Length: 237
Image 1 (spheres, rainbow, N blue to C red):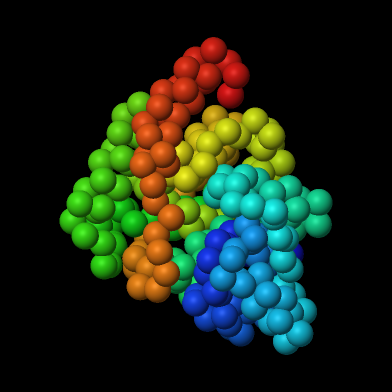
Image 2 (cartoon, rainbow, N blue to C red; image 1 turned 90 degrees about the vertical axis):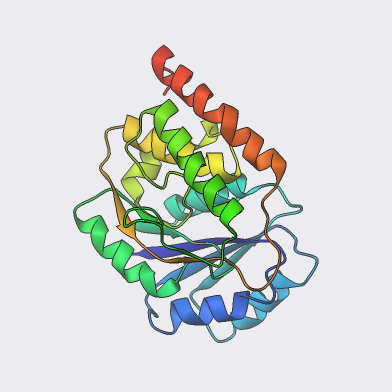
């Protein structure tokens, strides 16, 4: 099996070395694709330097910050063109534990999409203020109610995909970013009849760097779930 790990970056120079080492030292057969949105802090330059020691690191540098969703779509298309079998998405800020990657991949033997879930066994989140925790929890409840998906962590960004799922989704039609990108991709996968499972993880909020959360990302998630439901009813998904 050819396995690709994808991580989008913007100003992750303080985290990227540790992330790469934690992923590839224990799993040297994995390939890692970094999609950098022209980080002014030199993240891309650090990755390029590490390519001297890790021949299985690849980097795609984009001209400007264009959003999480478009970064992953870029990475998914890259992975499909390079004939990878399993594709994993992970945040660069170490809020997702790279040690969990093999466990998520192992669940792909019997499933098509595996979500590293914060909410399958109660609430498994560390370092979040209560306001942020409640916002995330109720955003997921809202997404379940509107879309009808039985997914407790629909906004989670730590996932493992079989290539067949990404091949079947019309990636060029995916519109959303941030929280709603995760919701939309789950919704499209389930609408195609693929099997989704949630695997418990512990999410540790970033301790280095700045959060990319914004009001625009939250607002998009509010209306996107309604748009997905309408498209499903009209037969567009």
